[in-house]
Image (cartoon, rainbow, N blue to C red):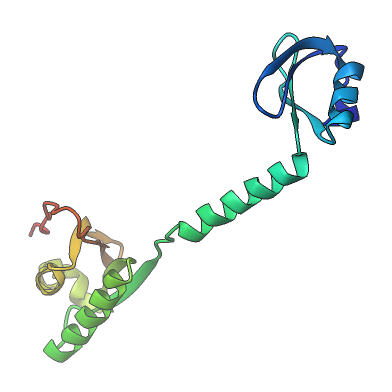
Length: 176
């Protein structure tokens, strides 16, 4: 609440330099703010009496939005990219998929590696597990296994996260 929006009878007032001016009637505090060409802003509404500060509210809001924009600009959004393999994938195809996964990881994205079992392939999930292990060996310099390969329905899914260059983390290899 600012200026005339403050409905309390008495308020504790702090000036623009952070010094306490004491408890006074709201009307008198508004007059002080008007003389200093500032706004009276309630900063601690639950206190007895509420604490108000003399400040340039528009400037404060502008600086606040500027800080929020700066924080948003510095955030890194991690997205999940997917690489699809098959149980019968050929050598050149897996090299291409590994190269794509390395590119995604270098951009800071996580990679979801999935194998879709078709027809009777679902009875031989160990073949899919070998393909996943081979894939992990190809990207082990840039990735850590965040989620080991698990069979969910007709799919085997594994999630790789980029390695943090600042610290060496222990990699969890997929189990057979």
